[in-house]
Image (tube, rainbow, N blue to C red; front, side):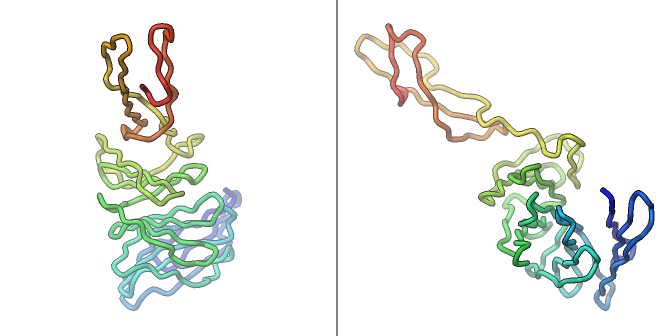
Length: 239
C-alpha cells in the first residue's frame, strides 16, 4: 500500500499517510456528539480507494460515515437503533459493504446507492470481527469461541465452526492465503445399507448422505455404477 489511513487516539479524525515518505498528507475531521461518547469501530476503504467508510456509534445513534479519497465527508448511512458496529469489509468489486454488529447481526450496504439493504441476523450470536475470501463469495465472522461462515450470494449462514479457541476477537488471512482454504464440496459419502444380500431377480434401493468439509450434509448428483455388471447392475437412482 502506498497510503495508510490510521485513526487517531481522539475519535474525531483520521490521517492519510504516505508510507514511503512517512509523512502525513491529509487530516480529516468530523464532529463528535456533545458528550464526546463517539466511537469508531469499523474502518473500511473501497478497493479503488475512492471511498472511506467509518462505522461509528454515539449517544445519538449509529451510522456509517462516508468520505471521499481526499477526506471530505459525503454523508452518513443510518443503522438501526441499538446497533453496535464492530468491523467492516467490502466486496472485491466495491459494490457491497458488510458491517458486523455485536448486537444485531450483519448489515449489508449497497455502496452505489448508499443504502442499507438488509440486516442478516446471526441466530447463534453476533460478531466481533469480519473477513472476506478473495472472490467475495464468503464472509467469516468471529465471536470468542467460534466463527461463522456466510454465503454472500444468498446472504445465508452456512456453518458455525467451533474449536479450542481462547477467545477470538479478530480475523486475518496470512499473506498468500487471502481466504481460508475452500472446504471440499463432498468430503465423505455414506451409503446405506452398507452391505446386503440380494437374490436372483430381487432389487435393493440404496441411499446416500453426502457430507462437506465442515461436516454438514449437502445435496449433489451421484453417478451409480456396478463393479461387476454381469452379476449385479444398478440404475441412475441407486436401485
